[in-house]
Image: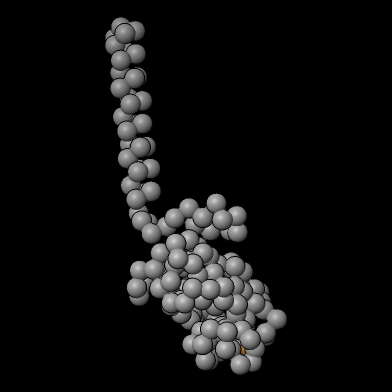
Length: 150
Ligand SMILES: [Cu+2]
């Protein structure tokens, strides 16, 4: 092989690798169309927290473990967004709207029962507002959901 043949072969190889890389990158990016970049909110780096309502699918997830809800403040999310509260801790949780113990800030936002580790509670936020909640079993553990017209 001449040096020119080797160079052409090498360049061809690099181009094929680049094409494969671009294809993988593009197909990965297109895999979750409802995810919107949330970094501009400054509240969280979790992309899934800026979402649009899509009916009965899970639009965002809040996890509970070690006595904390994560993210502590979720949003903004659009009206109609369903949030799943997942108990990843080793004690029960009971998600309920403030104010303890009446839970009247957002009527209906109340698991009405104790959620065991590994189980979850889902609630669809229809009303615009900043909704505070707590663990009814330990009211000092709190979180916030921000529902805004996006
Ligand atoms: Cu309560």
